[in-house]
Length: 289
Image (tube, rainbow, N blue to C red; front, side):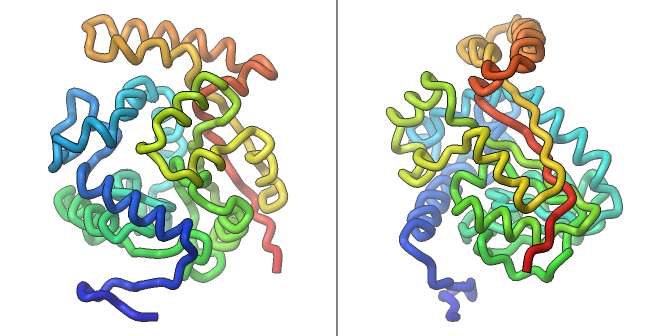
């Protein structure tokens, strides 16, 4: 192992991971703060330092305006489970959720990412938020983590598994999770043909590996090989219709109505697969050797 001029670890990585680093580094140099606020009334918290590049490379940020219900479901789980615990923000990006877990009372919140730029951004955000003493960020390969077995009580994963070799990632997550711990994952789904068409026509927003490895429900179910309890909830189908109205005064009322429709329709087997996202929890890790 060697280090670069900044003392950062350089890992021998296969080409797909090098491409992920390049893609992520580029994005994190454009938005250095809270990425999912970049298209909201709180856009200042996103810290957009390259506005000219933002429109091209973050044109999909508008979709996160309608993700409030899935964020709320995730946050409720974290709020209950994080206080006093050791937590991990897996593939943390700019580290926003590790920061959130620290504010929720985590004893220590770690964040790992392959992108050195993301890790630098995360450290600055945590210091600015006053939780630098309860957070720690590191450049690390998520498929070969450097943590001991049974390290974490709570692990958060947001939109990361489709960047990784899924079986390797699930095996590592199971290894580092404590027997009574929980993993909260949010992932986009591949089944809706309209959504997947959009992904294929916007290749500049993601790597080729990403597009080809968006998770399906059968992929989520494979997690049962490493976890004794896998629970899935589906979000965002009709709510996507609200995206064009996100800056309009009646947006919140419209979103509430469409969230209600989703809550009904996405209980129906088969139709629920058309959702944009799934939030699922993984518990009871199986410790294979």
